[in-house]
Image: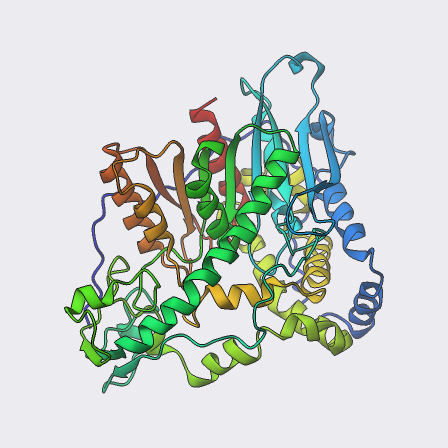
Length: 507
């Protein structure tokens, strides 16, 4: 198979910044102590402490004190506040947990305030942005004061976890595809690492009709669940418009959905590796009967697949998925968070092994980019990649994940086993702009250099929005060097500078 890359008129954007006046202390040593396995005594301690219902709050506060330590002089004008913000969602006492960080320079009290809001992805909470807390320090010389709000999305972290939708815990399956794929899969021949072009596939039109009728109302309810929570938080916080709404992955999906549902309530949308941009055959927006010219018959049709993520014949990862993966996706993964704590210290070890290398690799990035002497901008950077920081982050994420969430079920209703949304963001944006509507907010989509999400879909969405808006800068695309899906964790240096650059354009 040919590996074809489409020219969509966008370019990768790597940011390199000037060296600050910060001097590396003589006591600093790069972390070469790769603790791949947690000692049993420590894993037992983490598990035992996790039985304390206040443990997640304790770890959240410890992260803040570590990442923007009051002992560092550059943080002397920074204050943070943690609060529960009541939201009018559902019948109960529901709320969003928020940490807000702002500058408190007496000479700047008369500056107008801009509000920046971070929304995390699935399986995470606001502390996953710990390496981005100090972005506030990059904004000291701006014309505005900036207040940065890190939110635990509804159902995650220390926010309330209402099961308002009562969705089936037995995840309903997607409409079945029968694939004609006589050739064995050669990873070297896959397009963009994950996508295989097979000969053909077939689908039953009647089954697709029933699948769409079942899921469309569910997807609308799920969208309302998350986007209403964000907007109720905005209202309760007394914010007329969110200046910058930043969402990652699952949080990026709902931030994007928020933007087209409440377009007048934000000015800039920044999506970090959002899940579910691309179209695909199982999208509920797929006009398959119109495309095949069969308006009424219940019959199976055979179609030619495409590698274009704008095309409803795109099969995404389906041709390379194993039966084991599909089984686990439906039957095992939704239950794992609830079972994690029951695995005791062995569950801690499994979770630790999953996260440690992802967080430790920042040390390789530091070395690759010339060392701490070249890369570090302040004393806050000294904790990046230390085992103190990594262990605190993993324990925080473990405590968040092991408390389980209704989103463990909701996400499975939204996505397919190939990690695409049944209601693609591509179609949400095109529907919003269909009548010549000009987007009232700027859009910035950012992926990691080695992202497993479909960054090509993001590029093509940017191109399409700019065409419809008749404006080459209505939407922008960029990539973070050395970043994967968790780009803001993998390379916080460039991520924070990228955010500063976006803020500065409208400062």
